[in-house]
Amino acid sequence: MLANSPISPTIPVVDLDRAKRFYETTLGLKPVPANNDNTSGIATFECGKGTSIDLYQRGPSKADHTVATFEVSDTEEEVNALRGKGVVFEEYDMPEIKTQNGIATHGPHKAAWFKDSEGNILCIHQLLR
Image (cartoon, rainbow, N blue to C red):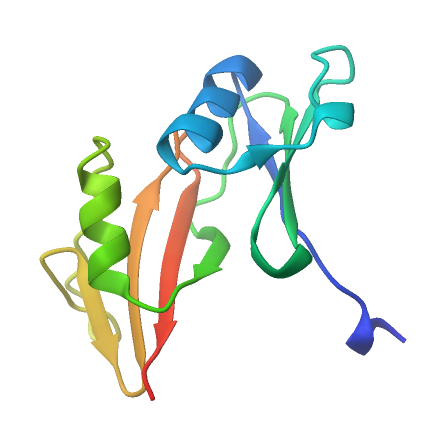
């Protein structure tokens, strides 16, 4: 049943207008007009391959983990593009994750993490082939 169902993350934000600007302007996501009227406290953005991401207004998040991951074909290209828009990437030095210049390579995976305007941790992930 759920194994074949699409899923989309729903992310809490403190300031919905600020978060909408970040997701649209910085990340380049396209808002879904019907869900971005500022009356519902929810904003939806189109992502790749028919997926979407929802933002909803609430208090600060207590999440200290990745809340959404974007699958990309070239991690370095995406990191450089986002850095050009002012995004700062996290640096990790843990036994399981070590980044160099904001990017970690682990087996067939390459990833980079950054925070959105509300402090939520987002990931860029590439499966190396």
